[in-house]
Image (cartoon, rainbow, N blue to C red; front, side, top):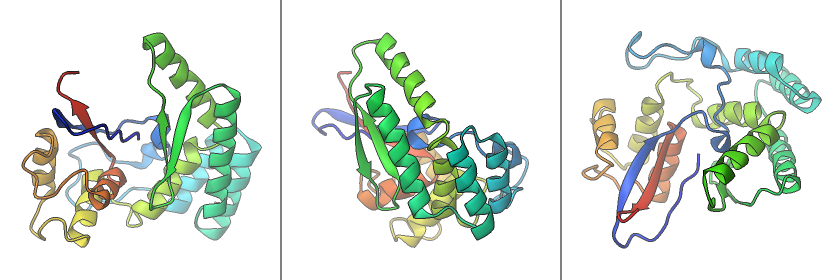
Amino acid sequence: MRIARPRRTKSRIAALAATAALLSGCSGVGQEGQRTEGEEGPGSTMDLTLVEQFEQARASATSDFEREVFDRAIENGEISADDYEEAFSRYRQCAQDAGLEESYERQPDGIYQIQPSPFEDDTASQRYQDLSIECADGTTMRIEALYRTQISNPDLLEDGREVTLQCLVEAGLVPADYTVEQLHEDFQNGFEDAPFDPMDATAQDCLVRGGYNVEIQDESS
């Protein structure tokens, strides 16, 4: 997911729920094993183990490279950092060959954040989306989604909000009695009255882990 940080002057914070966007690497991999909202209570975990999700992803892989990565992951029980780096390197090369203008920043958890250059119009935006998805398929799309789950959600919690909450509590950014419901309410209100600064680097990491995208948006836009 892209996290833009323009100047704060005359701006407001906008909180956006992350979607299955290419740039975040959050593809639909493994979604078949997840519950429907409201079916289970707090603490629910994914139906599939991580290795089972690797097996599922391998079955839908579109490149020999992906299949090799998932073969190793199934055998070792995890995706290696080297395999993730190679996947991203292949995506980046494809994007450059396609003429996509992007910048890349490696986050503390090792996942790369992709920031595309501003688009001139909707046509350019759609072209970028189409080409970037094409480049991700067979490189990062499935690998990054599960690598992120592996490092950010080792307990395989079903609800991304619980992943964020757990991270915020462990980081000491919110009190231990801060709840998922409070987090959701703060999210709905753009984190205006949240007990933490959503633009703090540690808070950003926690939010990203749970599937949130937080931006600073100019009020005039």
